[in-house]
Length: 480
Image 1 (cartoon, rainbow, N blue to C red):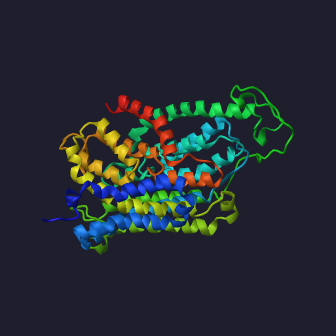
Image 2: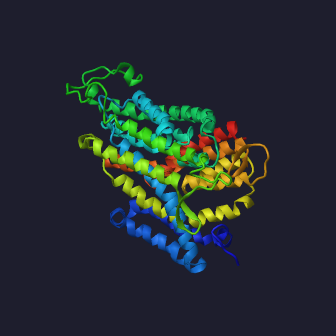
Image 3: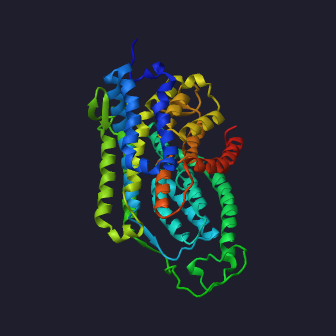
């Protein structure tokens, strides 16, 4: 029996995904049943599930194959992933937006739209970290505000990142495999429809809660002694006793030089996709990337190494040049990114069997239509990391043998199917807290600011109720 790193998925039993499922259940259940235990023992919990995968896998397939899989997954997938998130988190956390922003429904809609637009320009992580604090500050006076954060996760941390390879990791991986940089602009009609529908949902929900706040006399200090008029969206005028205006006047931005560092990070990602076209970085005949040898045929590409160094340089410059008072205003600390780093290394390692099973058995699933690719890519992306899930179904689509489509290193892929895979991976990452890394970051930051966020299942319930009708509409219009 010739078992290699390419075909070992053919020999994996279905129960090999149990450690991955167990880790997901730990994330979902422990924060609400044994939170003190979870916070104190998070590394041990993750190590338990990782070892529960590694020991049986090593015993069954040998330490050599286990080592190969761990190096390939951790060094080539996890390290670039977490470095990019760290860079965006650190640099965006050095930008403080100050001033009299008050969380009315109209203002909240504007802030959500700005975050959604920024997501494709500076990535969902950059947009999420940059915009979540102004949104939380604007709505600090409101008792009911968790729904604002939920919609922010749906839009700025996920759906808004669909227009460029910078926006979300799956699209970046597609770019590296031959999908043209500007091809993803073709997802614009889907983005516009989804954003419009979600904004209508949000306006109804936020308007309902805001009206109750106004009726209860819970008004922002910025509106003290002032009739609400149009800002109240038709809820009527109301005044309160004179209090000091805490709005702070005009809007100002501290740490604005960090915007240039965000551009450096974006440039690093783009550069890593351009450099392979030069003979110094890749074999012109095969496209094989040159790099530092790690183990057998695994190399750390020089392109990836350059990207990592540039991102870490941007983060270091940001930490060195940004006043700590600016970060203190943002309540900036490294706990959210540290939690994400610990959690996702466990996810990346324990999902090795799940992805291998998909690679080996995906063709037998009979998936050939755009709608099928949209839903199954999206459903799995909501629990598996959406970047490798995207690659699995990109590879599956390239193996269909269809002659008409877009030429990529994974094969010829019909554009309708590529749109479906791309939209499914990016959009449905919003269905759970672990579907996309920024989701957890936003949750942690909101909870640090005193927002009572929904539980793991509570958030998923919110997301399903809001997004499934939107995705059904997408299917009928774009993926039939």
